[in-house]
Length: 165
Image 1 (cartoon, helix red, strand yellow):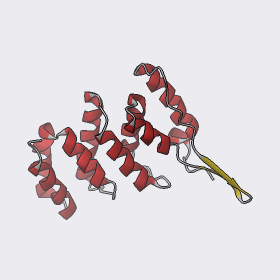
Image 2 (cartoon, helix red, strand yellow; image 1 turned 30 degrees about the horizontal axis):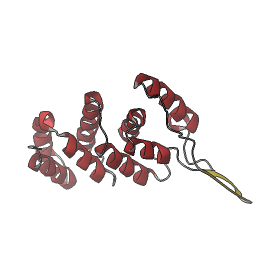
Image 3 (cartoon, one colour; image 1 turned 135 degrees about the vertical axis):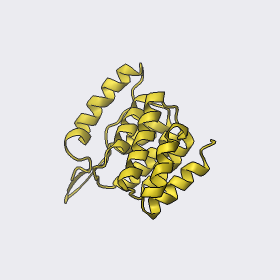
Image 4 (cartoon, helix red, strand yellow; image 1 turned 120 degrees about the vertical axis):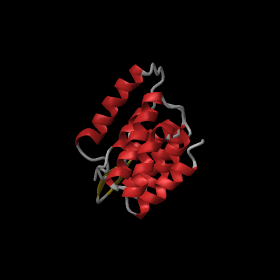
C-alpha cells in the first residue's frame, strides 16, 4: 500500500521536483525525503513522503517549502490529506518564504473563499494567510464577505479583523 498517490504526487515525482528546487535554491545538503516503510506478512506500506517534507520545511529547507506551497495549492485528496495539509501550513508559518510563495498562498486562500471550498485544513491556511498578510487582497475579501455563505463570511471577518498585521 503506497500512501503517496500517482502522478504529480508520487514519491518519484516529488523527489525529482525536490532535486530541481534544491538546485534552484542552492541547497548544498539536500534533505533525505525517502518515505518511511513498514512490512508485515500482510504486505508493505509506503508512508507519505510529505512527512519528511514537513520536517524539512520546519528545518528551513526552502526547496521543501516550495513543495509545501504546491501541496496546499492542490485540491486533490490524499490519504491522511487533512492532517498533512494542516501540518504543511503550520510548518510554512514558521519558515522564511519568498515573496512569490507568499503571494501564491494568498491567492490560493482567496480562491478557496471564492469557490466556498473550505475543507478542515482551511483553518491552518487561514492562520498562514493571516501571518503573511492579506492587505492587497482586502477589497476582494470585503466583496466576498457579502456574497458568500456563513463560513466564507466568518473567514472574511477574520481576515478583515487581522488586516493590520
